[in-house]
Length: 169
Image 1 (tube, helix red, strand yellow):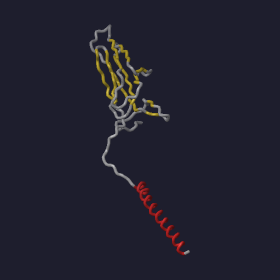
Image 2: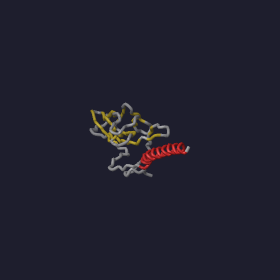
Image 3: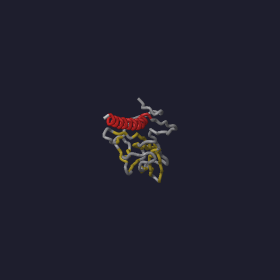
Image 4: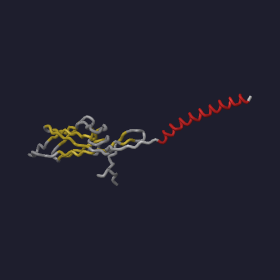
C-alpha cells in the first residue's frame, strides 16, 4: 500500500515539476514580449506644408498656366488672373472652373510632384489704342487637403499659416 502511494506521489510530483518547467519556459518568452524595446537612430524629414510653383508659357496671344505641387502633402489650387482694363481675357481648361469670387479653381487634388491641368488664358489686346505691351498677372494659391469626419476631402481657403508653419491668428 505504501508502495502504491509512493508511486502515485512520484507521478504527481513529476507532473507538477513538468508543469512548472513548461510554465517557466513560456513565462520567460511572454515577459520578453512585454519588456523588449528597440531604439532607433537617424532622422527622416517630414514635409507637412503646402508649396506650389506657378508655370506660365506664352504662345502667341495665349498664356498657358499650370500649378505644380512642390510641397510634401496633397493640396488644392486656385488662380486669379488680372490684366489692364483695355485687355480682355477668356479662360478655359479641363478641370478648371471660375467661381463668383473671381478665382479659377482646379477641381482635383494635386499630389506632391504633380501639376494641375493647364488653364489657357486667351488674351484680346486693345483695339482702340496703340499699346504694344501689357501685363497679364497670375496669382496662385494653395491650401492643404482636409478631411471631414466621414473621410470626404475638402479645401479651407480661409486657413492661413505664417512662415514658421504655425497657424496665424
